[in-house]
Image (cartoon, rainbow, N blue to C red; front, side, top):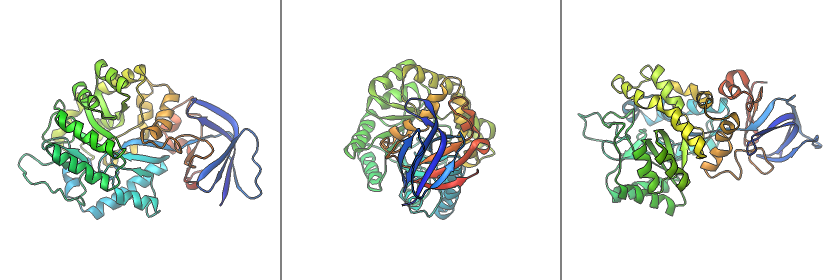
Length: 408
């Protein structure tokens, strides 16, 4: 197998939150074989002198929608699956070029795209997917206008959500996603901005339904991801065993305390609210829904601050849609006022790996780990803007031991 050696690198230790200057890293095949403060001997190797640039794990975005080429979910529901797959290939390739070597899709991404990426048919991050997000009638995954009754529930229609009601339907749908190889199950536990008929304040799914989907996931050794803004919706879901809370903008201290007690994760997505406020309608968000953004926009940073103080594990997430996906790295600076740089780096690397249960091989520069690595000009532990501006600072992306983007 080919050997690559990065020399004279400043290596980020994501666990400790420190930088290791003048280190050398060897990669053989798809994995890291050595990390050393001394030069590494090898008879034949491709040696890359980084001259002090930062070497760190590839980034992990734990809340994406790789098929969301538009912010208009009703339009997406009606689109050709061939068009959507082609658009997804472009979206995923751009993510990789921003340094994201793994992403967790929480509505839309599925086994076909994951297989295409794994087989090299498209450039993009490793795709951790859950299939369609499960919603009740009239919930955040129900994109039908008020005057439309029928919903196309065929799996090959490219909408982000599936509509189910009652415990038996919910169990069946969860089992279908598990059958298709899902890594997690996503449910809509609260109203949303982009859905036409619900409200931000509405709880979705009964306690019995929430408990049933958690049981189905746990029987398959998976976990449940919940879309939730309000403190009440968060508490209802976490009390039933949901592991990953997405957004959480309107959390209160009681909700944070419950998450801490139950070991639940928070995946804030501040990037999407700022993007929707500034350009959501231009990106396809129906104008009549844009007013809902204000209900969650300003509260998001406060929820992140509460979670940071409480020691809630947080991963990096963005939830961007359509043309707004180019703002994927803005989450770093949006959290920076309340989260230290080392924790932001950890959120987008080791914490993301822990959330998707791949911490044994992703999220750190360690021997035996997959060689998902990026080279950055500057030190993100001193200036998190290094990661927020990949067009200025990102020099190289390696995935599975192969250089997939090179701007040196």
